[in-house]
Image (cartoon, rainbow, N blue to C red; front, side, top):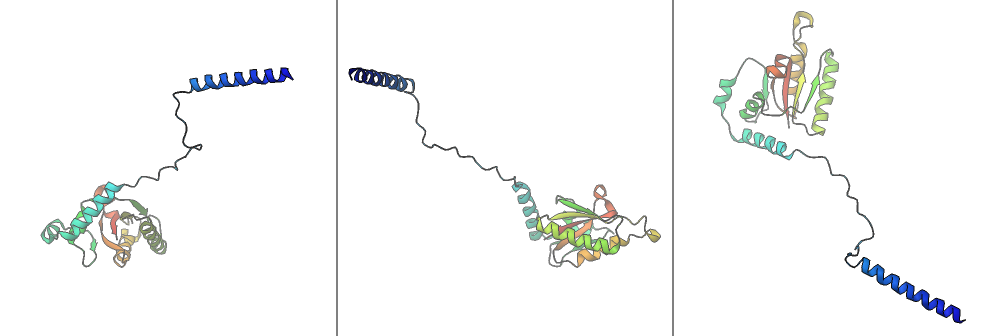
Length: 186
């Protein structure tokens, strides 16, 4: 039995020596507080806050500052619409391209019924996605009978009847000119 006690005491001494060496080796270590790793979920997509602020400021300025003389001087023979009660500055800013065009619909090659359905679906989708300024390309009617822009007049009529349309005007030359309309949605 003596061998077991001496072996046990030798083993205990070795264990104590090992513990002392281990404590010396990790003397500067800081114990972990948590035993699990926390993974952050991916960051949400960026929201263009500055653009939203700019557009809100543009709409606010348009609603506050009414300058009917400036609008009359800027007029032309192209079709334009402004919802009753809206400041003329809204239309002026839309004509000048102050709003960023966020989406577009091209009606080339569509019949009247197809175009009407597509315009309604497009505007509903834009409202759902909170797109405020959009372009609808209706074409110039160059391939229509008599070369008349049939869809152009239909689209303008449909837009003027909608509650969610605040204003629209003919697109600038670089954006489609007489073949497109820029629409500002509520």
